[in-house]
Amino acid sequence: MRWKRPIAKCGGPTVSKLRTLSQIKDFGGTLVHGCFDLVHFGHVRLFTMARQLMPHAPLTVSLTADAFISKGPGRPIFSVMERAGCLAALAVIDYVVIVEDETSLPILRMVRPRYYVKGKEYENAIGAAYEEAMCAKALGAELVYADTHFSSTEYLKRLHDARVSD
Image (cartoon, rainbow, N blue to C red; front, side, top):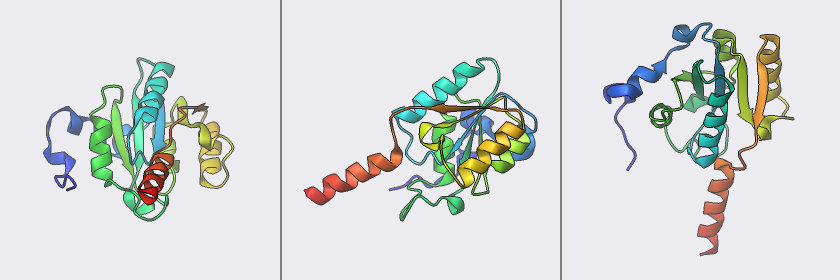
């Protein structure tokens, strides 16, 4: 059964990490953006590496809202509030923001990060990922592509393949 309570009713440090776009205007620091549907070791490595870029500046993680995720049928597996709650529970992350857009462009323009961190698989991407990279560069952010050797999509594929072969 999926956890149904909204994160705002959980209390504690998790809620204090949630921010709206207007609350993080010109935060700078480091920004990591993505779906983060199944948080795994690769994500933890990504966030830890992002934190090390500017240890004393905010590490903001932004999430794509459910309606804008196009990773295939049945995705996202967890709702945006569930994903936000999971990320906010990680000590390495300072702020979590939900982006109601198919790209990170709104948050890039609002935060104006010093570093914009994505997984290595986005380094030579086209389309939206390319637009995001160009926007980040135009705002003066340094692009960092982290090779974490993990992928939620690959995990799900392996799980599906294992079930089919049983």
